[in-house]
Length: 174
Ligand SMILES: *[C@@H]1O[C@H](CO)[C@@H](O)[C@H](O)[C@H]1NC(C)=O
Ligand SMILES: *[C@@H]1O[C@H](CO)[C@@H](O)[C@H](O)[C@H]1NC(C)=O
Ligand SMILES: *[C@@H]1O[C@H](CO)[C@@H](O)[C@H](O)[C@H]1NC(C)=O
Ligand SMILES: *[C@@H]1O[C@H](CO)[C@@H](O)[C@H](O)[C@H]1NC(C)=O
Ligand SMILES: *[C@@H]1O[C@H](CO)[C@@H](O)[C@H](O)[C@H]1NC(C)=O
Image (cartoon, rainbow, N blue to C red; front, top):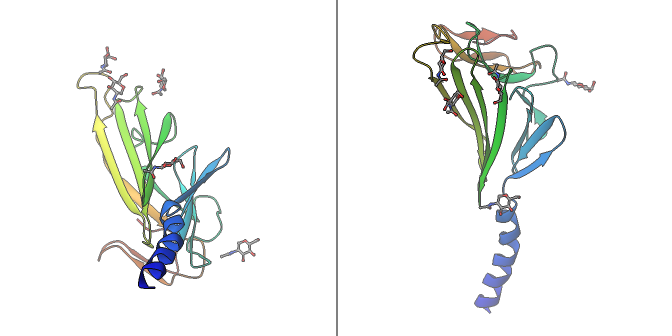
């Protein structure tokens, strides 16, 4: 009796694990989702839109740069726009994407990664920057690399990174 209950439980659980992190694709975006959260990634620049957590859009609607989460480099040499490619990685209970921009014009190399695990409500994020040319062309000084969580919704009243970087009822967070 106990044995058959366990078998039924295993049958119910197995499909959930196989589909733990689902990926769907259109011509312009990829959507990653598990049973708690989903988010879209623009293929053209790696920007994240529509982080939906329990039916609430944490970023709000896109308006200009607002309503998105993205990394940029104010000094200009590093980027994900001019020449990025992307690759999807997955395991039985996780999936993720790595955007690579090997910009031979500036000598700047960027890899931007986002991963989602089964049963977690948060995203894992990794950023890798490199200079691959010691002579020319040279990217120059890095300056600043910033990852922006830039909501466009009244949901957030205060967003705090540290004592110097914070915002209240404001759309720009550094
Ligand atoms: C986003 O746009 C939709 C459709 O116009 C609107 O119904 C919704 O209220 C907007 N969401 C926010 C957070 O502004
Ligand atoms: C990764 O995704 C592919 C395509 O959906 C699937 O066939 C494969 O089994 C997945 N790999 C693992 C380890 O789950
Ligand atoms: C980036 O491109 C340069 C020039 O083609 C090449 O030497 C280098 O190996 C590339 N780097 C990576 C990590 O692919
Ligand atoms: C973009 O990639 C192509 C093919 O790898 C390369 O020929 C071209 O120089 C790259 N452009 C820039 C701006 O890095
Ligand atoms: C570095 O830049 C020089 C000059 O443009 C070029 O000759 C050389 O091939 C580049 N090296 C790499 C690894 O891209």
